[in-house]
Amino acid sequence: MRLTIDKIAELDGKTCFICGRYLLNNTRRDLAYAEVHTGRPVLLRPERYYLFACPNCGKIAHKRCWYEVADKKVKRSFFRTKGWKIVCPSCGFEISGLRPNRLDWRHGYQIPGHPDSELMELYTSDVLAYKAGALFGKVGQAIDGLFKVVGLSSVTDPERNAIAAAAARVGKTLSDIAAKVFKLDIPPERRAEITALKCQNCGAPLPLPPPGEKAVVCEHCGTAHLLP
Ligand SMILES: [Zn+2]
Ligand SMILES: [Zn+2]
Ligand SMILES: [Zn+2]
Image 1: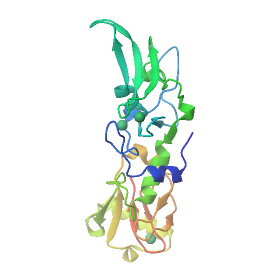
Image 2 (image 1 turned 90 degrees about the horizontal axis):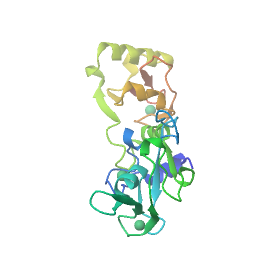
Image 3 (image 1 turned 135 degrees about the vertical axis):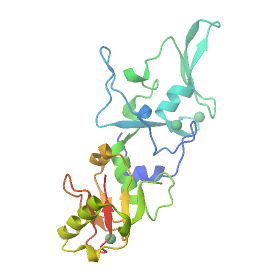
Image 4 (image 1 turned 120 degrees about the vertical axis):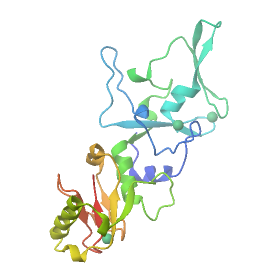
């Protein structure tokens, strides 16, 4: 099931017991594929990844980590594989008995007996929205490095123009803008994933800037935010 922002917040700061990364951090390798039996592998859209908790000890790991580490080959002899078996690396609980084969990750691998529909499902857009909204005033460690603080005097000319335009949209001028500017440091292609923004200074909700505009100014405190 798709996790709500509240459920995502509960995972903030928690790590995968297999790989040690934060559960709210994912790489392209974690993204889920649709189950297809012919043709090229197809990534699920919107892009999402899954977390799975051991039914016995409750420890949580990325689905990809279960696939790579816990779903092990059982050898018949040194050159022949007898099958596959999935065992919890923490408590040793047998999640699946021996199966002769397993589906490749890119063909929509499912944890035996625990299909994706039962797993914790994270949309990368939800995770990014949560991180962008929760950056400051949160203890969570997973949200590092998304916004960085730059001085208004050190921004580039195009950035300054974008800030001036954003200021004008809320009835302000550059002279009203705070010296501390928050710059969202994500790849430009991920900007479309942002669905909500909060002022990183005062916490007020910020309107998403119109497409093509690279700045948004908080109408309450005059803090500028730069987007990719
Ligand atoms: Zn992991
Ligand atoms: Zn376990
Ligand atoms: Zn503000």
